[in-house]
Amino acid sequence: MSDFEPKIVAFCCNWCSYAGADLAGVSRFQYPPNARIVRVMCSGRVEPQFILRAFELGADGVLVAGCHIGDCHYVSGNEKAQKKIEATKDLIDQLGIGSTRLRLEWISASEGSKFAETMKDFIEHLKGLGPNPLREASG
Amino acid sequence: MSEIKKLIDETGAFDCVECGKCTSVCPVAKVDTKFAPRLIVVKALEGVDTNLAQEKEMWSCTTCEICNKMCPYKVDFTGFIQGLRSQAHDAGNFPVLSQAGAVQTMQRIMARGSKQNRLGWLTPDLRVKEKGDVFFFTGCAVQLGTIYYDRAVELRQTPASIVKILNSAGIEPVVSNDEVCCGHDLIWTGEEDLFIKLMDRNVETIKRSGAKTVVFSCPECMRTFEVDYQEFLGDFDFELKHISEYIMELVGEGKMHFNKGDSKVTYHDSCRLGRHLGIYDSPRELLDEIGLELVEMPNSREKSACCGVNAFANCSEISKKLQHDRIVEAIETGAQAMLTFCPKCVVHFNCLLNSPKSMTENEKLKIVVREFGNAIAERLQEGG
Image (cartoon, rainbow over the protein chains, first blue to last red):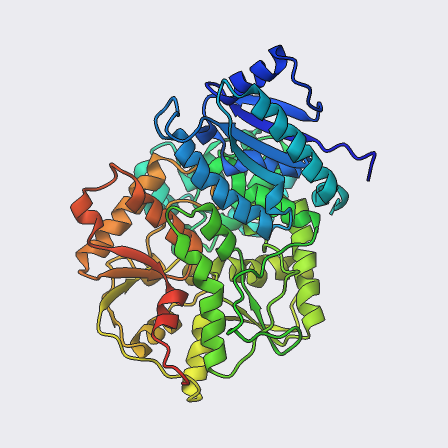
């Protein structure tokens, strides 16, 4: 499995985590380039369907990142995200994808190093799990 | 056009005399002036609109089949819509799906055939087998309860409730981790290829279990097996039974006893169980058996009103209006709860009851919409 490079779809909120990813970039923190970042206005915008669709299309992991609880630009969007992600984790477990392929992290605009660390850690974890089981199951 | 001609032949649409009975009873046409079942059939018959597959209107049909029941010439309008949707899908005409299409995506993922983990609800006190005479087809109640955690979380209990009921009569049903969604929502949104994959997998799983009877709680799964699967595969050599019929048989044999309740409830005939399958009496007998007083709504049995959405397609203001009217009907009976077997009706009505401005808070408190199976399990006599 050493040559397996997991593909990650990362949904980052506009106000905190996307800026956090930006900071990781301008600060030259090194992290592997496995993630495709999708900017959303709020982590609460990420619906279960976005996550299911990412897995259906072959993503090995999905990261949803938003502002810390209490810091949401829209007051409580991240609290909604928390509930949705919890339910979605349960759902992808039932579908056999495995709930640890989905992560929710709070990363503020000043936490560039946390962003890089989260990515490294998630990629290591996914390398241990191997590819998304749906990739091999063609029907 | 030849495909449309074939569809006209198959569904008896050629017999249409344009009387407009279908449009006058259609719940959608009452609210949406642009939608008329008759118009769609007439357009197809006269070949006026060569681009029928591009019409957006067909996705508004709730496929509740009240038009079929009222049609004096027995035109299968719902079957016509089903066929038309399949053509529409091929032509790139898609509906707007609820939850951005999460339920359909879930079904497509299941059609891939990777190993699932769907029996998490099975607690150690429930007795089930791997092979046996009775197969319990659980359906997607748990998954729906997970997606709609904010309004229909009780659906997560449904399969466990049904197994508990069967266990109390000494029956250990087969439940399988290899079961997949019946494909109901896929065939009603036109994805026939994937539907066939799901169908083949389910039928194989049931055959492998050696079951002689398949028990359903979900009316949609049962309709899909009874009508759509048998249309593709011919008659099955196993029997299909709804849980309400099956329980009444067991009660008749003296195998099951219930604690009598004393509350007033009303029963919502879901379209799949009622008009599509003709099962009206056994749920009512069952209510009598568990000692709940049934107060009928004005629109019941063949005339039952619709929950407003089919296959999670085109949920709109019109759907909300239909749900609102039905809930008002239920409140007016004075019942404390509205029971129904269909998990989607539970989702849709609770969606209305959870929307902030749909009704006054005071009105909302007057009724709860519950899944029937869970209500039965609560009345089971221990050791009965």
